[in-house]
Amino acid sequence: MALIARRLLEQLSGSFSNEAQAVANPPLFASIQVVFRPTPQLAHGSLLLEQAYALDPSQPYRIRVLRVCHHREQGLMIQNWALHHEERFYGATMDPERLGCIQQEDLTLLQGCTYLVQVRGDGFCGEVEPGCQCRVQRSGRDTYLVSRFQVGQGWLRTTDQGFDPKTHEHVWGSVCGDFEFERTRSFAGELPESW
Ligand code: CYC
Image (cartoon, rainbow, N blue to C red; front, side, top):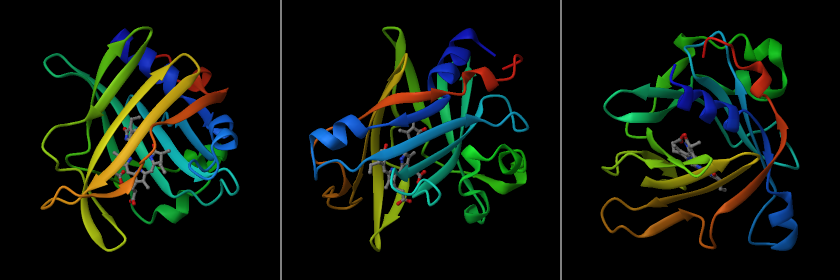
């Protein structure tokens, strides 16, 4: 895989916390843990992602497989895959035995939710592909995702928001800026050499 994809995987692989931001800004920002862990039995570039409130990392509010790919024309991209019966894998980012059980048959690609990624400084920035097709059902409402992230050596910033497809009204997600994470642990050493 391209060297550039390898560098993105190295920067993402790890555990991230926004505790400093949460402590400085209650109640605007909850303390969240985000973990990306290499999942070597899956296709090249696959990371298991769990996002959870720091109070209870065993009950993630979002679990996905992200897959970093590099295409000659479109460049660097990150696909988002959902897991069937996802409860089976809650906590698997911290449990290598269960992490190793995830198979491609457990995954469904989330259409419209692929990120287009560019180099920025010594890190990367990305946003969800154009078209407003990344659909998220929340509080009984259909929304489309607008999302951006930036990652660098030891840090990650994200903003996710959902909008109503007809009125474009803001329905959920950040009203007070980016989530700012610092890396607390790296899993880059677990990336297979061939990725
Ligand atoms: C949803 N966050 C999503 C979705 C994507 C991302 C694609 C919609 C599809 C899905 O359900 O998976 C985000 N995917 C990403 C990012 C990358 C990527 C950023 C690049 C590495 O490949 N999100 C945050 C905050 C937190 C948050 C820490 C604020 C509370 O980054 C929440 N994201 C969040 C929520 C949803 C979401 C609550 C909706 C999930 C749902 O309700 O099903």
